[in-house]
Image (cartoon, rainbow, N blue to C red; front, side, top):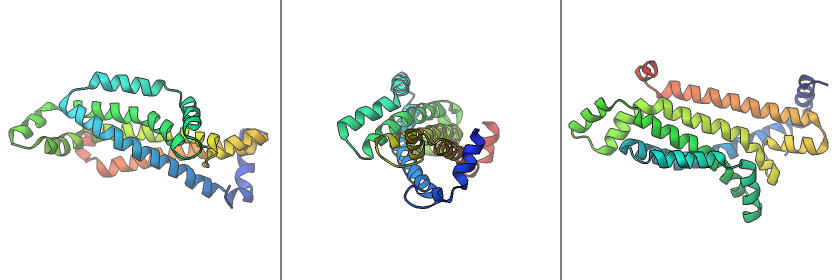
Length: 222
């Protein structure tokens, strides 16, 4: 059987659409892991990236942190956290957050520092506070690049959240891990197809978010 036959056999089996191991349940679990990890990563990465970019300091430190974060093996960190913390969601969240923070942090910093200084200086000359300069002048212009960092992080999380299955959690990775253990390649292909599909959906969601939140003038100039 080829990959398409495996995928057809998986999705056409009604048993895969019901119960605790059904596609809707695993899909919801995977989205839950991904959203939680992305939210935590954004809470960490966005404020630091915005402030360091606004004041133009800390770029070298951010690059070092990003390099270190990308160099850490996600699966190795998962195993280490599992040994240290035991079962639970925390050992899964830590590797995902470590993976997702660097692109958010660095891209946000670069987005703010790349804003044309002329309107920023004009805003300060008008007496605007630093917070208003940041959120009313710099962020609207930098928003497309900030969203691109969030999009990159989200796709990395969605693709990597399959590791949750290695420590007894659910999600779409359950099909891949269980399928490999059972030599059931229909499950493996089906799970991989669902993860790839969710990554594509993530791209569409961020494209729609960009269309809704970024002003047309900024889109044309970016």
